[in-house]
Length: 458
Image (tube, rainbow, N blue to C red; front, side):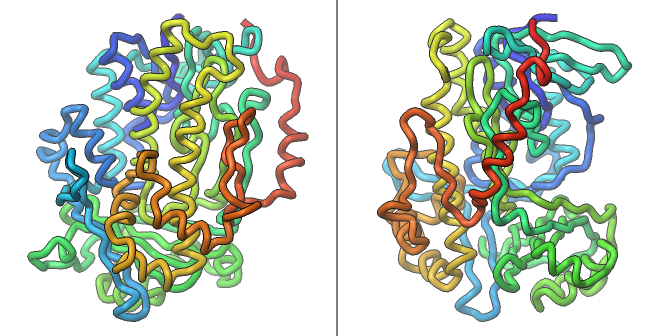
């Protein structure tokens, strides 16, 4: 089987990439191993993620399905000065902020909507699991696929996109991307489910909207979320240090139920009775970064190359926007440009790294300096941080802003430890609280497997 672009993974990043490409007349084939609809975490959208859906012409469908409308994020600390609200806002052509809305989604239905829309608009869907990338003279030229019916397929393509999310298919294949680094947040564990009957806000102002995202801060690396996903059900979860969870010696269900009552009084007030409507799930070791996630014949999008922290729900925004920004580079490559370069997508790779570094520096400041962060959100840099919360981290004419540069100074990321991008590597040197430098050599050693043992030569 041949296609212009092979997309491994039919989630939001894969479906979005297909939608952007098919609009330009490009043939795409999506390989998806799971059966949709499926359960998935990450239900909240930034304002910019919502804008991508509007660009796809899906606003009316989102409203028809009655997805909860999100006006912002409410964060609850342990005092009134520790409570704050960040609205969802856009910027007009003159650069002025204006109120905007986005959505909360039940991912099972939303992911199905995105995949169905991609297929309806021309994508070819293959039910199966991509096993090994096909390599030809150092260029990825497709993949071997284990079909759901048990057969094996060879799908040849001019370009292969890894949209496999946290499975990081190419990084785990060995010898295609660079190493995959784990970071300090990997000492965390997320435990979550869905509940019915939570009490919601009933105010008339945007900060009192019943369908806003709620964050409850207990202490460093110990927090909870509440995200409405329909008129009755709310996604809830807690993120804690792994050692704390292990020390409690409770089942994941008992741990979650107790934490929902003890973590924060505002959270307990909203859950007088806890009725779980979904199994309790766990995600450990969620922070990572893949080096050299673009190269000859391939690009990794979204979670397939980097995930920082689930707080404030940037996952969907990253998935959708990276697919959008990659489209011009993909079209250029398909036209034959840059095929002889060591990394035809070097400019795009650097573009993504710089954007996600802005996000990482904001999140690290939230964790390392919560009081200073709340002051900046409330007063000093309210508009600039509203941009980041809206997902405007890739707008490099405005980023890093004065706020982000001040955060970097506060974090000690200046002088010799400033953000740097190696001209030959085009990679963000990981200096944040996530990075364990002692792990990199081990990963490098384990990844030096002969290419032929990890890939099938065409």
